[in-house]
Image 1 (cartoon, rainbow, N blue to C red):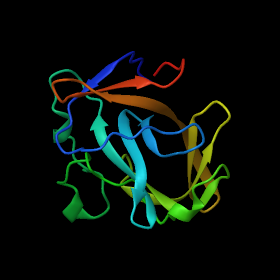
Image 2: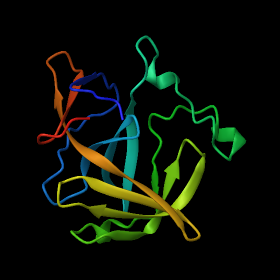
Image 3: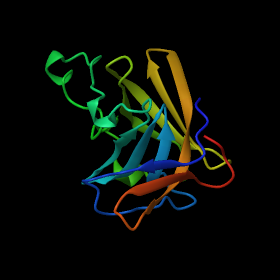
Image 4: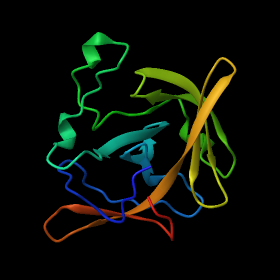
Length: 161
């Protein structure tokens, strides 16, 4: 995983800043080279990609969903994509959250998934296909708004990204 001590990010469409409480998955997370905001969207839990870490000089909004199984969606930008499907907001708790799916942009597919808060404050996200499962830890972030309207993301606690 890349070592990033401070990430300065400009967002144009986000209007509300939310911070994850200690026992909630709601908030901002560093996951697979991107920043994801977990929030409640109507009756479901959403995980919207809000920024993608790219090499210097490459516009994050130019990264496309080119591996999507649906050919019509391959030209959409990954920023704004909801990675979760079917996780009901009533399931938000300290217990693992089951019954939904996660989208993996690297493979362009949805997988049955489970979410669990770990004791270290990270979120364990696991996707499964039949009996084969793979997961990763998402790291919590604190996102602040700068005077110029840009946003800055830093690791929550003492974790390095």
